[in-house]
Amino acid sequence: MTLERVEKEILQILQKNGRISNVELAEQVGLSESPCFRRVRGLEEAGVITGYSARLNQRELGLQVTAFVQVTLDKQDDKKQRAFLAHVEAEEHIVECHALSGSHDYLLKVVARSMDHFSELSMQRILKFPGVRNIESNFSLLAVKEHGSLPVARGQ
Image 1 (tube, rainbow, N blue to C red):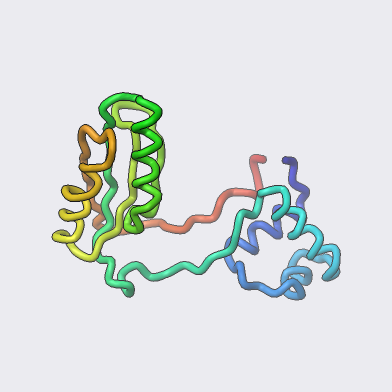
Image 2: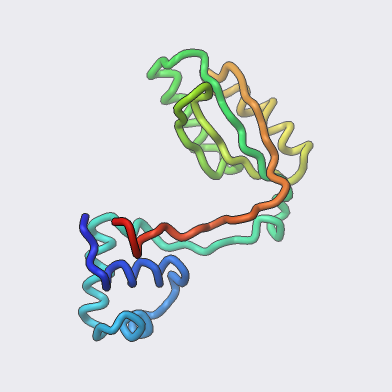
C-alpha cells in the first residue's frame, strides 16, 4: 500500500498517542474532522492499523524477569509445529514469538515474576511443549528501547 503524506502523519501521531481524539488528530495533520476520520477508518480497513492498546508497566505488574528463549524443535514436522505454536499462543507469559532463520527455530520473549517462576516456566512448560528439543535463554538486564514506533515517514 502506498501511503500519502497525511496518512503517514496520522500513523506517526497514532503510534505515539492512540487515544488522541479525532478533532485533535485532524487539527495536527491539517484536515477537517470528517476527512481525517475517513483516512483513519481506511487505514484500519486496509489492515495498516491493526488495533489500539495500552502500554503497561511490566515491573508494576510484578513481572521482574524478561528472558529471550531460543527454541530448537526436533524436526520440522507440521503437526508438531502447529501443536507447539498452539502451546505458545496459550501461554500468557510468552509475550512474543518469532520464527527464525539460522540455528534455532523460534525466539520467545518471556516475562516472569522471578527467576524461580522463569525456571518453572521453562522447565515445566516450554521444554514440554510438543516437538521441543532444546532451549537456550538470555536475560534482559536493561530495556534500552521498547515499544518503538514503526518508521512511516521515510523509506516507504
